[in-house]
Length: 247
Image (cartoon, rainbow, N blue to C red):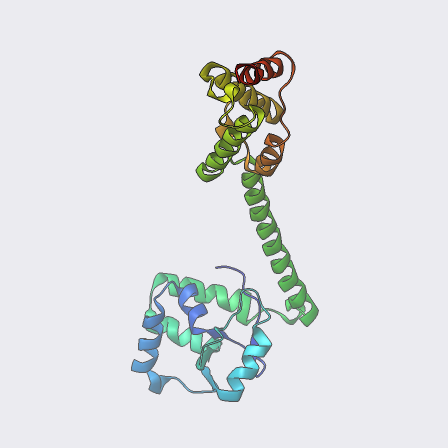
């Protein structure tokens, strides 16, 4: 049985129907049906408390600072079971698990010695520890998500955008798609290869599809800065100068 945070109503330790069903490993509907079928054997104030209206609202405010909240905010009425009520449900269920768990409830929940009872500050400390552990789990998940985002490759759409930008840069470096350099298939291919190699070397990848998403914006900006150097620049210039000579 999971450790229960002590909850009291009118100075009596109580359990909700959902808690009782979970502890006894019985369907919630069974608990409800058994109560309806044996209602004459239950006495309000001794075996259970029934809350609705303002009493229920006040109880929710009292207990729903527990994590996770004990009572659903949409609950319009609520039964709270005392030790005697839990015992009566155990007798009606009459299963080995129910008897075993009721013994645990008696020893570890309902009849804990005064010296072992938690003070309000200790209860708050337990609640704080639960929230802190939950926060650690959330931070861990967020960390894994961030790590995943840093190691994911660019999407198909991003790859297509890079292709278009490289194509545009080739035209620019060849001085337009009507230039002699651009219309020279062999030379145009050299310019493409040069741009792709320069980009991949800069981002340390072997194929552009392996560019990391975190580097996508960098790749976009870098493509615009690539210029021709050395022999290839000279080859493009000479190819384009032939147009002027021929004209």
